[in-house]
Length: 445
Image 1 (cartoon, rainbow, N blue to C red):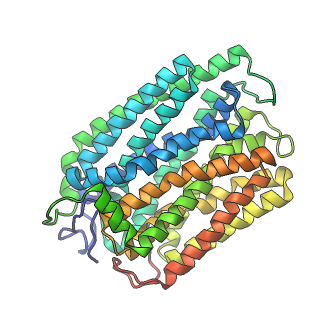
Image 2: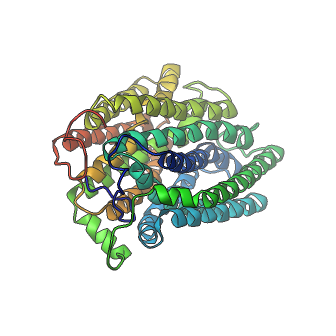
């Protein structure tokens, strides 16, 4: 396999083959995995934040979902510039730039909470997500490259398991800080004291996040030498590609486009379900529990993804990645249809189980696409992260449907997304693999 990370680098001796990864490679992989945890934690805070701003600023479902859109639209704006940055600065420097950008976004969130201005909340989320976008463009292919090529699916899925640990913790702490005493009733505004407490919770959360990101940046800076030594050696390349050239290259590859579409609808479905889960469980015709408790239960949705990724890391050593993707997407679709058709408390508990089947979808779609794309990994990775903008589009559609009907009925939208992902998995099974050390369709991903 001619494996390269997103900066266009080929594997050094001892990484692609040999008896196993060195201690330096293992430490580098562990260091990169801490980044997955950080952005998972921050991203999952959007779920309780959507419920909180709906009450704080007296918003409709559609307007509250603008918080998710402001966050995920950054992927559409920043992914290709991030890929170009990565091609010029390489992985470690790009990661540090990303972390500094995230700190700036947190600082703006502090200003937004103190001034109680929703527009500033949206801007702060956009800047924070811009940093996370740069981080993902650098870290996803880096985690896939730090070891044997044939184990890239397993390695990236394992890193995503730690990402899921962050997403499991984030909603619980976010609900504790943002939703204390918050109850949303149509046509009513929050009590001034409750509103002030929710804003203080947002302020405290993003202050601590800024401190932790700064500590993480110092750690990555300290470990930069070890990470760089563990990375494949840089290939001899000519002029670095422009953003337009990267986009054109990705657009020239059928599988880069198909993978981008799959990431778009997967992230859109996952985010739409997560951001409305607390409001869904809070509904009188579902569980009817207090909003803070419902917000804490969203951790179970993301916790399912964590368990699924750990189990998926084992399953991918025995089951072809294409088959596992199709099976998991089909199961998620079935649950969504059950929720929309049955409703009630059974639907509430069933919806929490969707996270278990979401678990392996992102890393498997990502690596399946990298293997089949005729474009470079720099162009393909940047385009796939660009496609995460689906998290800005699909939640708005779900918000419109839930506002016009009900939270349960709105599950038909992610159900349609999962049907398309079943098709992607089946198509990938038949496609030619260009960059894998394993034979197409073989077990061991």
